[in-house]
Every structure is written in C-alpha cells, then in structure tokens.
Image 1 (cartoon, rainbow, N blue to C red):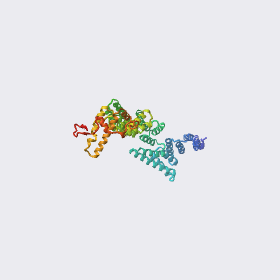
Image 2 (image 1 turned 30 degrees about the vertical axis):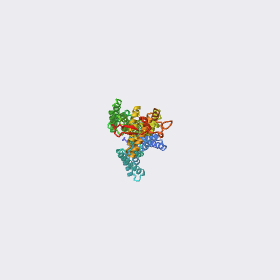
Image 3 (image 1 turned 90 degrees about the horizontal axis):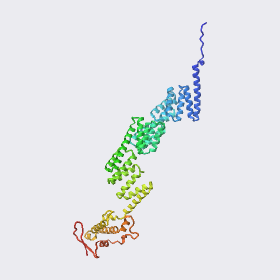
Image 4 (image 1 turned 90 degrees about the vertical axis):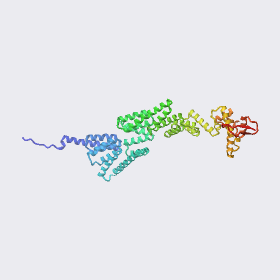
Amino acid sequence: MAAVDIDVPVETDPQIHNMVDLERQAEGFKEQGNAFYSNKDYSEAFNFYTKAIDACPKNASYYGNRAATLMMLFRFREALEDSQQAVRLDDCFMKGHLREGKCHLSLGNAMAASRSFQKVLELEPNNRDAQHEHKNASTLTDLERMAELSFEKRDFRKVVYCMDRALALASACHRFKILKAECLALLGRYPEAQSVASDILRMDATNADALYVRGLCLYYEDCIDKAVQFFIQALRMAPDHEKARLACRNAKALKAKKEEGNQAFKSYNYDAAYQLYTEALAIDPNNIKTNAKLYCNRATAGAKLKKLNQAIEDCTSAIKLDDTYIKAYLRRAQCYMDTEQYEEAVRDYEKVYQTEKTSEHKHLLKSAQLELKKSKRKDYYKVLGVGKNATDDEIKKAYRKRALMHHPDRHSSATAEIQKEEEKKFKEVGEAFTVLSDPKKKTRYDNGHDLDNDGGFDGRDFDANNIFRAFFGGQGGGFTFDSSPDNGNFFFQFG
C-alpha cells in the first residue's frame, strides 16, 4: 500500500505556534508597560517593556517604548541605544528617530540630534515637535561656539552664562557641566564648582574631567597637596589629560617655591625671600588665594627691607584678590603707621576690628586713632628738628639753634612777608620748647591730650620773647644780632 502524504495545518507547527504565543505574550507585556507608563510608574513600565523585548526582540516599537521610559528616568544613554536599535529594525519608525534626536540633544550632541530630526522631517515634513527640536539643536550649536570663543578670551562669566542656557536644552551633558564647573572655579566660586564635579563623580567615579575640576577647586583654595592627588588620579584615568598635567605641574612648582621663600624668610634672608615670592607669583596668575598669601608674604619681606611703599602696594594687591584677608589688612595698616599715614591705618584697623573684635585689634585701632589725633596738631618735635625720643639736652640745643635762626631781629632787613613768616616760626619754636622742656606737659603731649585744658599750655598767653630771654638769661631791654655768622652760629648781645 502506497504511503499517503498528509498536509499538516500551519497552526499545528510547534515552532510557529510558539512564535505566535510569544508575540501574544509580548503584546500583553507591552500593554502592561503602557498602563504603568500612563500612571508614571516608569520603573515598572521599564520592566514590562524589557519582558516584551525579551519575548520579541525584533519589534521596533518595544525598543521605542522602552526608550521613552528611560528618557523619563533620565537614563539618556540607555535610551539612545534603544532608540538606535528601534530605527535599525525599522528605518521608517518616526518616533524612534525623534527619540534618538532628543537623546542626542539631552547628551549635548547637537550635530547628531540635527540629523535625527531631519530624518523625522523627511518622514513627516509638518512634524512640529521635530521642527521645534531642530531649532533647539541649532541654538545649542551656537551656544557651544560662543562658549568656546569666550573661554579663549578668558571671559569665564560669559561661558557660565552660555552653559546654563545650553544645559537647559542638554540637561544630561557632562561635558557642558564640566566646562561650567571649570569656569566657576576660575571665577573663585569654588563651592558651586565642587558641587557640579561631585554630582558627576557620584555617577561616574572615573570621570577624568570631574576629577580635574575637583582638584582645581582644592588647588585654588590653597589645599595643594589634596589637589595634586586629584590631578594624579585624573591622569590615571586619562593619561593624555593636558589640563590635569599642567595643573599638577603648577601646583607642585607653586608649593615648592612658596616653601623655599618661607624658609629663606625664617633664615632672615629677606632679599632671597622677596625674590622667591616674586618668582612664585609668576607661576599661575589664576590662583587667587595662594597669590594673595604670596603678595602678603612679599610685603612682610619688603617691610623688613624697609621697602614700605612697595609693601603697601603688595598688601593692596593681596586684598584685591581676597578682600577678607585679615593678615593683609594688618600688614598694610602697620606699614601705614610706619609711614605716618594714620588715616589709612585707622581705616584698615577699623576693617579688621569690625571683622574680628579681639582685644588686640581694639588696641591697635585705638593706637592708630591716637596717632591720627596727634598728627593733626603741631608736631613740636618736628618744629625743633629732634626725634621723639630726644633727651632734655638735645631739646635745649635744638631750641637754641632754631630760636636764633628765626628770631625777628635776625631778619629785620628782610621783606615784610619774610619777617612775618620768621616771626611765626620763632613763636612755634618757643611753643615747642615750652611744652617739651616741661615733663608734665611733655607727657600729656606725648599721650595725645589737649594741652589747653586742665591747666596745660595756653597759646593765648604765650610770649615767645619771654621764653627766649629766660633761656638766654637776658635782662629786660632789647637785643641785637651780629651780622656776621660764624659757621652757622649767630652771635648776639642784649641792650
């Protein structure tokens, strides 16, 4: 009996039957995923879309749906992979191209985003979403270009402005975040820069750019040893990271030169210390905090070398870099005191005392205020031409010389204007001697007290001629000067 061929219905083929079941099952997973997505439970939606893909890995829409879910979870790199897989499976899958473009845009790749949106517009020329996003991609390109030019010009504020606008379009772009953080560091806004870099490192501990910026912040905050550790770690992750290499070299050089200067200062070699601090200041103009300390250190060395005006300039430079630097205010105030610029000294000491109300700062302020008060009255020491520590004999000798020099009779043949000026000086010399030759008056004068109060000196009752006669022992009557000077000493006789 001949064999009979029997046609087996398609539905009864086990392989085909299994495929149909998987497709049906995948659709069920997709529907469940859609429900969770609608309820904004994106984690569960992701799980069910994944099950759908596992069941039917050749279905473009499943990848598209999972991409949409990943985008809602801000996992843009994974979403990009799913979008790209979706359009590989179906090049006419419009939503796949749109999502791919949005992922590229969020990750900061404006050029790739533009290509994806252009593909959508080829499929749907009137797609408003694609038209809008295509403009955003163009805007992002412009912002990148503007930021690059601004960075070259060292206009870091403009870069931060551009990056803030760029990140509004490309929120997941680490490159933009790093550039913003670097510029924040260069602007001295270290906490903000550290926050951005730390956020990236939490997501990617091996990100060399974030490690570099973290080190940069520490470097600019004068924590050089810690900064070097971050730079070295960045170079381990990316051996060709040129910025990290340069920063590491600068940090090491700056630390070494500063320490060398400090050692020279401690060894009383102030000339060498001054030169070393100068060399350190040339290493990195961007390191504001360290350079402020270097300027102040150089001012201290300069003061030791009696370069007081240069020391004042260095302190001012330090304060411009760091207006909270108390040590620089104190150093400048002392230099002002040493150069008798008492108003400026009082201003600086007031600033210090307002910031740190210590007894020491209060004492310094009061001393400066006293010297300022004393400077606004006649300086009897200068009138006599003696120092403030002059002895009684030195004061007497100075009076003798100045009184003879300015006595009105000595200038009787001069013009009326000169006679008036010399008479004024003669009276001042007498006033000075009256005060400085009297221990009680001298003490009150030195302490800044008013001499015309409490029984002190009263200029209204003062007669310079009486002082002159008393000092030289004259007996009433007038006196005349010999017209011939002898080595600068004038001879006189009383009438």
